[in-house]
Length: 226
Image (cartoon, rainbow, N blue to C red; front, side):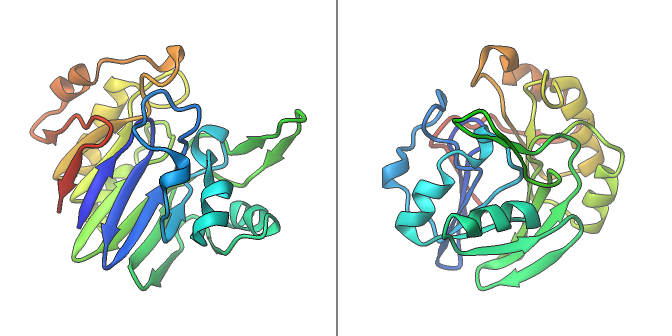
């Protein structure tokens, strides 16, 4: 399994012959190395409905035919755009040909802002567990610290966790480090920072806060083999 990071909250997973793209915010993302027109994933997984996570989903999926996985509201909205979808909700999971996807709690918001200044409610935000090839990846999405992260780690031992550290809209480095201690993931990668001025952070300081866990700073385009 090959896992790569592409700035903000964009994560790509290549497993079982499929390419899965999480939260493909590419155009307007100052931290990414990707170009939306070059991406052809088989699957797009959305943690929640904010524009900096939905990003270029519609453009990419219309071209590639990607299956979009997200909560019921996101899936319904994307289906209305003429796209293929599979709805899930918090605590629910489904087996796909590339692996198993389960949605977890996240404490945040989830609304999409249109160009004509309309706000579309897109359901509850989520974290995502992806289980494939005997490995488990946890993408926390945008979230505050919450104590049930301990249960997530106990129920699904995590090989690789992506945690937001930007503060202001999500956990900051201190809370994210505590979240890592609850999850007990083998490797922890900081995401959702430095894209905009309000979420500017030094990821090295987050790594220093980790106690007894392996932290890894990934720059856009960096990969991990699991």
